[in-house]
Length: 361
Image 1 (cartoon, rainbow, N blue to C red):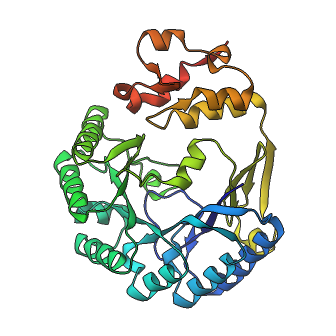
Image 2 (image 1 turned 180 degrees about the vertical axis):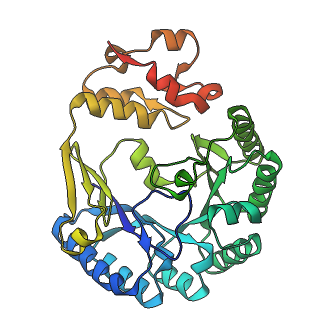
Image 3 (image 1 turned 120 degrees about the vertical axis):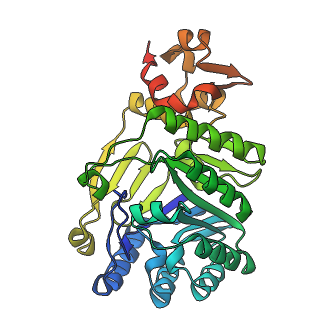
C-alpha cells in the first residue's frame, strides 16, 4: 500500500451537482474532525512508504491558515517518499498567497482546481463563486510559488451551447497548465440539481462537445490518457492511475474508501460517528471474480488499456481464457496490440456499453 487519500468534507458553499461526503464549513467541527482524522491515521496506517498522497473533499482549501497548518502537521505521521506526488484539491475563491506558501512548505507539489467552467451564467447555475479573472490570478500565484503541476476540472453539458464549451477550452489553453479533467454533467441522486428535476442535454450535442474537447486538446499536445483526463507528457495523475490500475490504496476521513488485500473498506459518512472514532462503515472481501471484473472496468478507462502480462501475473490465467471478447475484437470495438487490450479510441465514449457486452466464459 503506497497511496493515501485524505478526505476533508468541509465546504464554504455546496455545489448543485456534488454528491460527495460534505458539510458546510463550521468552526466547531474542524478541530474535532482533524483530531479524529489523526486518530484514524494512527490506528490504521502501517508505516509503509507513501508514493502518492491526495487530499480531496469537500474543499480542503476551505480550511483557514491555522487549520491547514494543523492538517499538515497530522500528515507528518506518514513516511513520504522523496519523489512523492502530493496533490491537494482547492477552490479558486478560498486559495490565497498565504495558503499557497504553506502548501509549498509542506511538500504539496500538485494542485487540482475546481474551475468547472469560465462562463458566468453556468458558474451561477452550478452555485460557484469565482470568475475567469480569479482563475488566471490564482494559477499565476501557484506558478510564482513553484507549483507548476496543476490540474483543472471542467464540466461540459451544463447547457446545449457548444460555443461556451469552445470558449472554456480556449481559455484553458491560455492558462498553460499540464492537466485537465473534463466531465459531462451528471445528475446524481441527493443533489440540488436532482431535486430541481434537471434533465440531461441531447446526447448528440454532448458527444459533439466531447469530440471537440478531445480533438482540440490533442492538437495542442495533450495526451488523452483516460476517458475524462488529458495531460502533457510526464504529467499523468500518478495517484489516479493507482485506482485505474486496480492497485491497493488507503483512504482516511469521512466517506473515504480503501482497497487493501482484496478488501474494499468504506468509511462512514456520518460526522457524528466519525467524531466518535467509529470510522468504518463496511469491510467487504472481494471475490476473485469481482476483482477481475473491476480490473476490466477500471483498466478500460485508460486509453492504453489493460496490460495482458500484468493481468496474467495477477490472476494466473490469460484474460482471453476468462472473458469472451472474440466478437468485440472482430468488430473492432476492442483492439489487441503490443500486449495491451484496449477499447478502440473511436468507441471510448461508449465504454460502459462495451463493458456490458463482455461476459465470463
